[in-house]
Length: 279
Image (tube, rainbow, N blue to C red):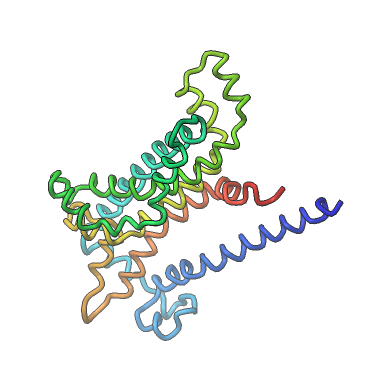
């Protein structure tokens, strides 16, 4: 009876915590969007106030769309992010399936090796990465960013997905083998559909650092044809003068894909985060 009584309370606490986190996380997003539709004076005089007839202005958006190739920057970010997430989910899920399904000598060490990237930031190897990209002729290409971001996202993907795949019923997989399914068919047709919440969680957690990253686009792909949204918005930030209307407008446009992805995967994301938290 005590467990039954605690479950609704625990469930309500988890939902309340998620709502509070969402409100706190969305506050700077809403603040950025409303200030992007205001004049420069209104941004500094009343940053928390919504725009009205006197303070409303589209100057920032006009500047973003007329100066530079913002559409090209946006396209580059979409390509890099989507392709990187695809490879992270594919290779991460395959590695997690192998670690959770097959028992072999050195299994634990291999899992530790694949997850060690969580503890060691990839930026520590920036010089070596840049030298490797120069030697391979991949500087100022989207391929360089895709390779780096795939390597950056794999450790977390393997760590999360391996835990979820261990919970998949062995009876289901063995039944598939009895029916003549190959290991690839078992992986793609039986296992992956059951770990969709975890896949959505990994996709969201992988997308945000990639989309918002400034370091590697600045180091590996600073050319005009390969700039990302985050790097392209820096053109409005000068050493002495900053066009805040254009900066806030560019950031508002850059936020949109993240919000769309969150809305699409919100249910799967919450299931993936809270899985196992409430019994």
